[in-house]
Image (cartoon, rainbow, N blue to C red; front, side):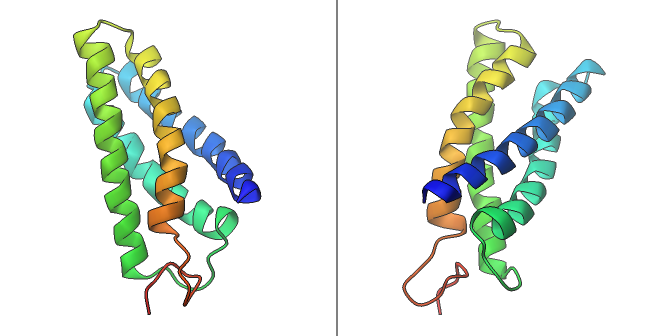
Length: 133
């Protein structure tokens, strides 16, 4: 599990850098911060799924519908958490949009490992591909 956590964090650093750059660029060109958040999550879901499936949790074989559905569902929960934090910080407290998202990323990153390990790429006693047989 420690090696998984290290690999997850390496993938997460790249994913976070990529998605934060997308968010910041969109906000910079005056896209609403919630729209920018939605776009960055769409990219982040795909990148995270591919990289964590292969590198972090080393799930072999084709991705099955259930695994993909769990990834999208878990990211919708993470997106809602991120949006709530962003709303509280930016819209309610007046924190800078970039700083608010940087703070939200820390919280969401911690939740993401637990969610992906236990829900998306979970290993059950029958198989290791995250699917119930």
